[in-house]
Image (tube, rainbow, N blue to C red; front, side, top):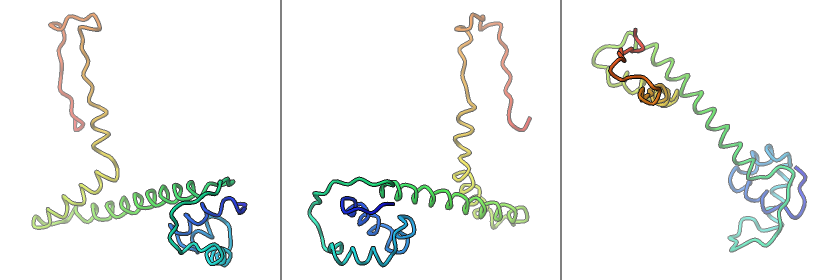
Length: 146
């Protein structure tokens, strides 16, 4: 990021959100430089408003959005791995541990969005709209186990 005087307010916002070290890494600016700017521009004091026009190559707001997206990805991956390990152990679980197995299943369902997958597969078709006589239609119930 090219740090010009006009975009230091956005840099300040990233530093306040992520801290000096992580902000320095994400913005490609030395942490010492960020600390010096904080001292020089009084970033640690409460401000009522900013009147600077901000233009940057990489918007610090985008850096924050990328950080949130990366955290979500890592969290989902960690939870999926954890649920897989616990599910494997649940194969030999005792009845008294059934509540724990249920919790693992609920976690896996959330992480893998199982409820959304089943909701998308349920479709109702009005056969009369297709020009078919409803009395001539025979429906069978098919489950995933079949």
